[in-house]
Image (cartoon, rainbow, N blue to C red):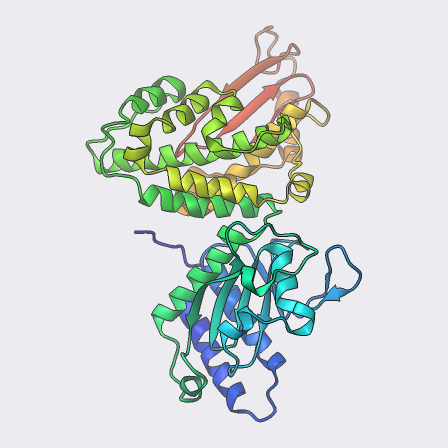
Length: 432
């Protein structure tokens, strides 16, 4: 069972939406646009309750793909900044979601919106539908998706009919949860992604499901325990509840962090090969991680851990990343202001861990103090420490020796990853 971390009171948000919607529905002056603020606030609250970093905006202006002109979606979900992830169409309560799904009105507006991101939300105030492209359809952003290639995957009824809305029945908890599930599915399984922190949190949500699906016992993968001990210095007592939980958490975090690292290296390799998690050992140069993914491919491991569908889903998520926009943002500096690209990639990977742990296990993040430290602050701290002991330590092997020395520590699983590379310019990559 997955327990979500609620950072907003969804019951209050739903009750407010119910009151405002009922009042608007009964008012003679109400138009379609009158409902936008209430819908926007409800969706934003539900997304926030799931820890999903998407902003809901109303009546935006979007440049059409491959053509002149603009689209004016009623609502839109943004993946931080100006990257639109999901467009939404709103209609009055007397219009059915099924009719909206096949609409070609307004110059095939639904088809255009769906073509842009591959997913769309349809709302008639009393219900919300999730619209995607049918499997096998090759989407082109500048070509509207025809009705026969659209797939209404799900629809959640807050009120089953306009009459039910008029009678004023409050939104039930089951419907509220179903709507939150639908919004989460839209952004985690279908929407394109551009922001690194958003990707980290989406993968973390998927990782939580993978962890919940792990077996109670790990008889077939007992050999992994020795791998953890040798590579990372971690030991687990699977006979205790705490030890077993620590291993489950460590295994899943290592798998997803390694998957992201391998995907980054695959992107950098540019070898023209499709990305597949089964081939991660080809790109991961850290022996332990390479061996871990090699082990995952073993039929007995796949059957025992039930990880294959979760890793497939994570790989599909990485396939939705707008890599141009993503890697333009994913340029976090190392402590060395100029240096090899590998060091900058290391810093980016280290930064990625903070939002991942925050979404995967916020209590663990708080307990371990997993926070990203900007290189400028670390560089200043090192400089102050070096000046305070300058002249007092003369050994060639001293911590701040002018000759380059490298210290590398890895603490996977429930611990933070840190990398340090010291020299006279205080070159390092750090996250603490």
